[in-house]
Each structure stands twice: as C-alpha cells, then as structure tokens.
Image (tube, rainbow, N blue to C red; front, side, top):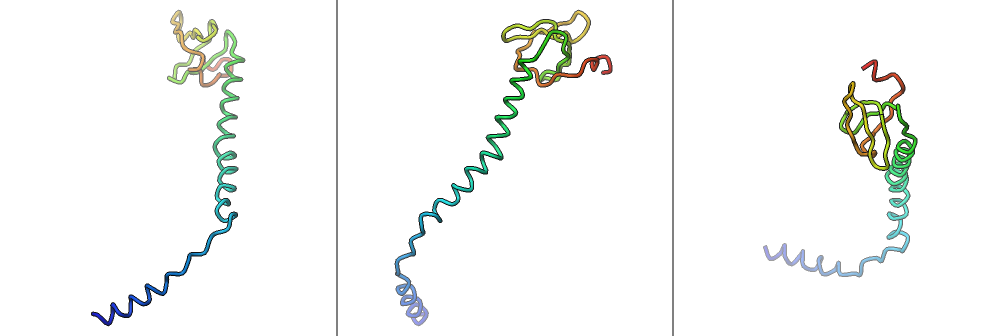
Length: 113
C-alpha cells in the first residue's frame, strides 16, 4: 500500500505548474456569439409580434368580426378607449378589453360557424 502512495505523491506534486492563462478573446467569444443569437432568435421576433398586435388593435373598426383570447367570436358593435363591445349572439353583447382581441376574422366568417 505504501508503495502505491509513494508512487502517487510525487506524481501529484509534479503537477503544481501554473495553469495557462486564457486569452481575452477565448473568454469573450461566447458572449460575441450569444448576444446576436438571443437578439435574432428571441428579442426581434417578440418585437415583431408586439408591433403586429398593436397595429391590429389600432385598425379595429365597428362591424369587424374578432376572436378574443378566451375564445369568444363576435362582431364589434362599439369601440372605446380601452374597451370594446362585442356582440356574440343576437342582442347578447359583452364588454371586453381591447387587449383581449387576438385576431380579426374575415367578413362573413361568423355566419359559417
């Protein structure tokens, strides 16, 4: 047993050299790769979706057919600053927030449902 320890101890002591210092580029290159990757894969598409949603909400008009985030489909009967009145059946209207509208349907879609 002591022969094994005598063999291992000098080998472990011989490895006390200073580790090589990495260069500046080798420390920064992951950031140089990840920052553009995050921008093009996450940030830019999210900004595009937000802009499209904002544009869609800005173009809403009385008589448009829309679907809410809760799945209600109906015709817009009035538009306020923050709320929209949606007719979901004959003489059945609900008032919802503008931000709850997820998509605008083509005219006549509700008749086919």
